[in-house]
Every structure is written in structure tokens, then in C-alpha cells.
Length: 499
Image (cartoon, rainbow, N blue to C red):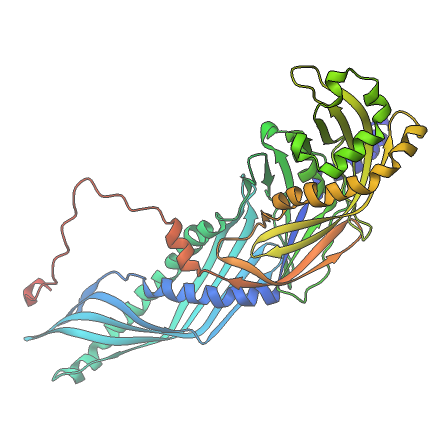
């Protein structure tokens, strides 16, 4: 009884541990799959055009034949379909296709010997493939398995010459053999295209890479993709990390993004955790701080600061009074992102000091600053970019309320300093953006950003800036030269006795 009660208490924790909420979620809809089908169909045509068929030879009574150098001349794929198949599959179906061929013939019938080429066509070609999608050990999306069936309903061969009637009578043996050999080569070609070539394209999706010299991003999949009849959903960790502590993880307590829309080709959702982990990583890297000293402090602000702290400066040694001013602005804790119209709140400290040459720094004041920023999030190509704007700003003394009143006159000039000096530096970093986990050659267009409670979504269309073949060839490993050169293939024999 006690064990059962303990299990019930631990059950919610176990469910949460097994289903870690994603920081980034991507949904591909049927409209997006239609675009992928167009590019995929071109890729399949190229693969089938390059299939190799083994030589066919044999005899039937006094009829001897040898078929070699089979080459695909043309493909017609008028009816094709690519659709989602729950729970983890994509189905690619081709119906009533035709394949035009040319091959070399060597024929011997009694004392008649002939050599030449034959044009043939395979009609009623049906190809059914099912691709299983899953997460590999590295957290990358992969095609883990493929099921394929291919059949050819009819095949015709065109003969010419004086023995045309004889060929047409005896061609049944050749056509039957060629139809069998051709149908047996389709699935192996598509199997290699899927498990090797298409997976090499998926390898271009960033999983764990560096954003800049300070931080990186982890886009590993948390679980296998979820496929419905209309959508493919991918849950990514979506966590930034400090490069000095790459194994450290920030717990995700944010709201899980929910995508309900299906009108656009693709939707990308980001939770508050995605942005919080970025600011936490930059905080760990120590880059959320800036120091202005001497001539870098605006002259008007320097005069105002010296007037504000005149009493404190007056009591110092004469050697210190005219020393340069130093302003050190440092975030006191990792900024937190709240995705809603009110914006993002950031707390920081501002230390004001005098820096006499060759003497210890003299601190005049240490004040607290609270700022509220608004963030404009947008996509450009495949990069997510953020533009920050300062909305609200206030300062107060950490010492006393009386000193806070004295600091009131500094609020406007310090806000101007932030807007003109600090914010451009921050935006220079954020506008570089971070790549969204899409394969190379695929970009977003016509993006629309929508805010929700605790997360935001970006609906967009897709565009192929590079074809699948171009990406595959870019990353195809260079062939290695054999230890012993292979001699060129011999020409087919013209001696009828070797048939």
C-alpha cells in the first residue's frame, strides 16, 4: 500500500521528466509538403535516370541473345503523391509512370547474327515508398527505414531491320527479362537515395553549434517526430549554452509552445525558455556589462554627474577631484523574458567612480537600474533576429530614499546614454541572429510573427534557394582512388559463337 502511494506521488514528476517541454517547435503542414514533393520529384527523376541494369543473356532453342549497356533516356511521372502517414512516416507514391530505355543487342538465330541497339519503353510503372522518420542518438532527424514496392505493367521494344518480324516473335524472352531486371533496380536506387543521400541533406540541419565566441545553441530533438494526417511536428530542445560550461543545462519551466494553425507551409514556435537561456548564457559569459571612462563619457553627462555628486567630490583629496569619471553598467542577474505586449524587464547596477592616475579607484555611487525593453522578433532567410528597444527606465539609490531623490535629475540623461550608446551595441549582437533548424537550401518567406501567452509563433512559407542535388553534391565525400587501377570495360563481343 505504501509503495502504491509513493508511486502515485512520483507519477507527475515522472511524466514531466519523460516529456521535457521544447524551447523550439516546428510544424510542417501539408502545404509545405506539397513544395517538398515538387523538389523531391525532380530528385527521384534524377536518381531513376541513373539506375544501372545488369546485362541480360540467355537462349531459347536456337535463339541466343545478349542485352547490355542499358540506359534510361526519359521518364514521365504524371501521377505522384507525397503525404503524411501517422505516426512517423511519409508516403511517396508514383502511378502510371513510363520509362524510355535504349540498350545494345546481340542476337543469333540459327545462322542469322545481328548487332545494334533497341529502343524500349516500360509503361504502367508503379512505385510505392514509405519513409520512417525518427530521432537518432545525436538528436538529429533521420530517415531510419524505408519500405519500397515497384512493379511494371507493360514493356515494349521497337525492332527494325530485315529480321524485324523474327525479333517481334521472339522478343517475349527479352522483354520479360528486361521488365524483371528493371523493376528489381528501382527500389535499391531509391533506398540509397533515401537512407544515404537524403540523410546527408538532413545532416545539414544544425543540432549543436556555436552562435558566436561566447555562446552556442542546442537544437537536438527531444523525441521522435509526431506525424498526423496533415502535419509533422518536431520538438527541439532550443537551449543556448555558455561555451565555457557546455555541459551545463538550464531547467525549462516555461510554458510549452502550442501550434494549432495549419494555413501556412511551416510554423516555428519559441517559448520564453529559448530567449531566457540565451540571456542566461550571455550573463555567464560576462558580456552583459559595459564600461565607459574618460572621454567615452558624454561631456554633458559628466558635468551633470559632477554636479550631482559635488558634495562627495568636494570632500576628496584635490588630486582626485579632477580625475576622469568611470561608469560601469552591469546586469545584476540574468534578464528574464516575458512574452507579452508589455515587453522584457531587465535589472542592472550602475557604479559611478573617479579614476585618479596611479591611485585607487574612488566610488562615488552605486545605484540600481530597472529597464523594460520591447523586442521585435523577425526571420530573415533562416536566421531568427531580435531588435530591442528601450521602453521604460528608472534609477534609484541602494543606500537611501533621500539619495534616490537626488538622482532623479540623472534619469533622463542616463536613459539617453542607454538609447544612444548601449542599445546599438546590444542590437549589433542580436541582429546577427541564430539559425533555425532547417536543412541547407531551404529558407523562409512571407513571415508573420504572433505573440501568445508565454511563447510566440512565426508562420511562413518555404522556398528552395538550392536544389536537393546541389546540396547533396556539395557534401558528397570525394571518391578515393583504388590501389590498383581498374581496366576499362571491354567492348561487347561481335563473335556469335561467344553468345
